[in-house]
Every structure is written in structure tokens, then in C-alpha cells.
Length: 617
Image (cartoon, rainbow, N blue to C red; front, side, top):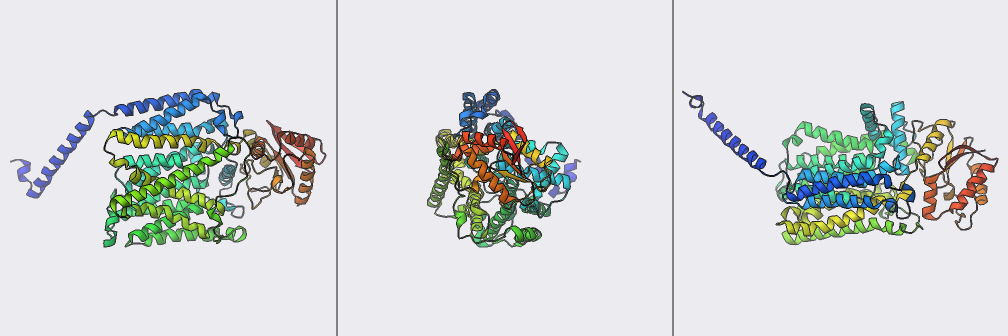
């Protein structure tokens, strides 16, 4: 008698089902193995991507950083670099429009495209971009040296999560913090794209929609938010938190009115509804809270909006998130009470973008318009996609989740004292969901019936955005590029000068507070001060002479004297800033430096590659 006859009927039935299940599985595996791994277009896309990488390697030695102008680095890039970029962009487009689409081909092409766009400056500059990123390096070095934050110093010391994470990575890998900062734009761009791709799995089953949305986000994210900073790490983590939250939400039972919305969601793996999944969600949110207060507040508003939309049976999750944020703000309140405030109704000043000087160099005005053009493109495409969906379905149900997620952070503009950068950050938080509506509802990527239609719709859009991405990312290097000589000069100042010394700048464009001696020198609540030209409204580029600048510098130093030593920094980074905005003529700066060298009230204590430090007496 066989074992099958001895087994109970229920077990026999299960065995039969298992045989059928494994038979179907084996058939599917065999079918997939018979298919070619890549279609013709995917193979061509990979070839273009490899070609782009090779051309980029040949182009790097010919990139001329010294030719940075009002057009940014665009004038310093050789022809072969542009050929490499075109090849990389074509690789992305061909991989995206291939049918059937291959995720490995798309990811490979996209990563090589990111390398060209984000790593060119990392390799050629030798130091991180953006003068405001260096204080983040200094905080990390300080915490690794001291072990505990100095909460009275500044706001970064009160939100140290990101800096501790970077310090841990440094300890485990040995990678220098300065090197991590150099390549942070590449790493954070890739992480953000991956987070968007994964999170959108809670809203659509289409891998094509998800990957195209991630690519479109990268092409339209002109804010430069991926530099070495707490927000750059907190933002992709916040996207992942939304993804976990949506998966947990979709697996719950809902009241009747939420049924239609639930049909738009994919629950995903049940692990996200378990205790482990929810604990992970809280842990990730806690990291956001202790790293960047604005991102934490925006994320809480987004999660609360989802909670209101779905009418959760267990809204205690929002209570836990609110408690975590409140507890951390309480411990940071002593700093806020002395230096800032948690809430400030600013009469809607944050709706306007932050003010800026008017550049005078040729090309700079064109580069300044590129972000507005990209933003207009996103806004019109999002509204068009939403309108077409409403007309087509006669319902707004499928738009509710992305609309709530995009709109919720805007509430911060009413009471958050974050200056006029709030409107830019709101654009950032809304961008993933706007791109999702564009790809899903306007282009309808997952529903396009044939290869020709996919190609005709996506190709011009991706190519146009790819073209705009170059000036958006590399067109502002007159202020984004930091010269290594100035970094070395600041390190010398922080290491060699007495504690409490003050560093005076001509213009607010210089790397500062880059070392573990972060808290030893004179601190200013305004991160842009002190700089001479902000204090000298009478200075006018055509008429100002080197003698005028020396006279004003001497009087300004006397007015600032509070017993601390005062040092004046002048370097190529500040020169680039002054040239861009036409503040002082190049010959005037040369005369100014020559007069400072002869003036007995100033002592030249450091000089290297055009970067100078003078001690004032």
C-alpha cells in the first residue's frame, strides 16, 4: 500500500495541490529560461551605457575647471564629455522604452547616467561642492572627537542623527568624511531614486511606472538637495517610511467609504503589518526626527494626511510619531528659546523664493531661468495628468493619495520659521508624487499598447528633461565650486589660531568650520556673517578702490573688536562669487591684497594657491 493511500484525504488534496503548484512553477521557470535575457533594445541600451562610461573616463582629464564662467561648468566640459552624456541619456531612454522592459538594463543605464551627471564635479574638484556643506563635515568630525554634541553651539548639534550615522560609517569602513561628502550627491541621488521606486510599489504593480517616476524625479530635482547634509539623508528615509506606512494601511480593514481608495493600493508583503514592520517604521521616523526637524514635520503631516484619508482603525501610529517629534523638540527647546523659535507666522513670506543678487556675467541669467522652466514643466504636466484622469474616470479617487502626500507639507509654510526656503522644500516633498501622477496618469506608461506609442511619448520628454538637467546641475558653479586652497586655509585657521578667534570674509562664500575644532572660534547666529560687503552699502564696483576697501576693513575690524583675534580670509571662492555678481573688479581685489600686505595693521599669516589669511591688529 502506498503512502498516498494511507494519508488522510485532506492531506492527499494538499499534496495534489502542491504537485500542481510546483508543476506550474517549473513551467514558468522553464518559460523564462527560454526567453532571451535582454531584448534588442535593452542590449543596445547597455552598449550605449558602457560606451558612455568609457567616453566619460576619457573626458575627465580634459575637463577644465578654470574655465568655469557664467554658464557654470558647461564651458569647461570637452566635446567628448557631451558625447558621453548623450550616450548615457540615450541608454536610459532606450532601456525605458524597450518592450518588454528589463529592470536590470534600466538600472544599469540610469546608474551610469547618474555617474556622469553627479560624479564629474566630485572627481575634478577634489573637494565637496557648496560652501554651506562644510559645516556638516565639521559637526561630524566634532562628534567623533568629543562623543557628545555641544547643544549650545548651533541647531546641528541639537539634531545629530545624520552626523552620528556618518561617523559610524567612517569607523566601520575607514572612509574619510571629506571623501564621503565629495561623492554624497551621487550616493544620495541613487538612494532617493531607489526609495521612490520601492515606495511606489504600494501604489502600483507596474514596475515600469515606478522606475520611470524615479528617473523623472531625478531629472526634475534641480534643488541640489543631495549634497552632504542631514536633509539629504532624511529625505529618502522619509520616502521609505511613507512606503511602509502605505503597505500597513492597505492591509487593514477599512470603513465602507474607503473601499474605492483601497483598490488603488497594493498591500505588498504582510511583514509590514507585523510588529517588526511597525517598529522599523517608528525607528526610521525617529532617525528623521533626530536628523532634520523640517523633514520630520513634513513627514508627520504627510502621514497624518494619509491617516485622515483612510480613517484608520488604529491612529495610534500618528500619536507615536507625534510623541517622538515632540519629545525631541522638547530636548532641543533650550536652544530654540535662545536663538530661534519653533513657530512663527511670517505673513506668508515663505511663499516667495529666497532673495538673491542679480548675476552680471554672460550666461548666468540663462542658467537662473532653467529651474523655473523645469518647475513649470512639472506643474503643467501634473495638472494635465490629473485633469485627464478625472475626465477619463469621472472620479478623483485614484488621485487622492498622491494629492494628499504632495499638498500636506505646504501647511508648514504658515507657521514654520524656516525662512523663504520653505517654498523650495515644499517643491521637493511634492515632486515624487507629482512625477508619479505625470507618469501614471498623463503618459499612462503601464497602459501604452505598443512600442511605437511608448517611444513617441516618452522619448521627447526624457530627452528634453535630460538636456535641462545639465545646466540645472552644473550651471551654477561660480558659487557652487569650492577651491581646495580655501578648504586648506580654513583648516589652518581652525587648527592654528587661538580659541575664540573670528574669521572675517569679504563676501559670504568660503568653506568654514570644517574640522573637529568646530566650537572653538567666535560664533555668529547668522551663518552668512560677518562679511565686509554686507556691511558696506556704499561699496560700488566701478568706483571702489583697493584703498577704500582697506580703510573700510580697518574701521570694521575696530568696530568688531571684542577682545578676540580677528582674521581676514580672501580666496578664489570669494573671487568667483564677486565676479559673478559684479561686486568688485578683479584688479581692485589684487590691489586690495597688495595694500593689506603693506599695511602694518594686517599680517599675512597664510598664503597658498591664491588663498590668503591676514591677522588684523
